[in-house]
Image (cartoon, rainbow, N blue to C red):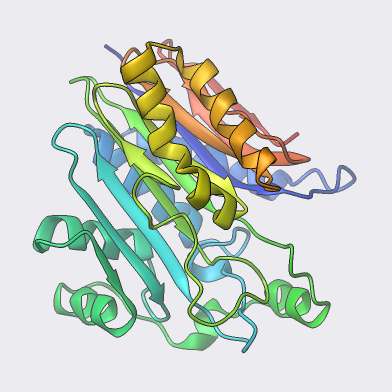
Length: 285
């Protein structure tokens, strides 16, 4: 079985007169980095690290500012084989929150660590920390000043490797003007991130509160396992639930047979994939 990769750089309101060539180039770079990795968990981690390191996306260096003008980032990873998962929330100094999430999964008995405790673990295991100025971009500062409270975004990746293992990873800065301490769906296993070799791997992006209430990622896996529906049908149903709760956004998913779904109900979603034939596709609208 060939590897299958899908990634996203967030969904939401996007301007068609700004085609985003830089975003497309970075998505391609992330896809290529992921495809070079052997295991699914290494693939999704590699892709998300590249997106976190860019100021173009709302994760890591490009994270949104909360109502106090500060950075608080969330991330999660999950493996589909043993259902291992790790997540961090409300971290301020970790350069790559997705790596800290993986540390939680691999180095502790826990699933989710928040704030200072998560940063302490990251530092103990040699992950790079940055000063607040590293994360603060002019674009996000302007969004806060213009009170763009609906401005949100996320990055994520899902993968199926040659051994049939699935994995998912998601990372975000939340949304502009959020209350300090707010945590979205990205680090919550079963909401914005989930992977199960018996069904699929999912990473969501959009209004986190709606994704949490609809348990989007687990809902997809459950529909596939218990009702035998297809990946596409499960994804469509999950997003309908989000819309009924007043939310918008999208998701990326891959199932154990290598099928890919990348639906969204917002104006656009930065997304890309490499399918079972090795064909690369990248799109925004």
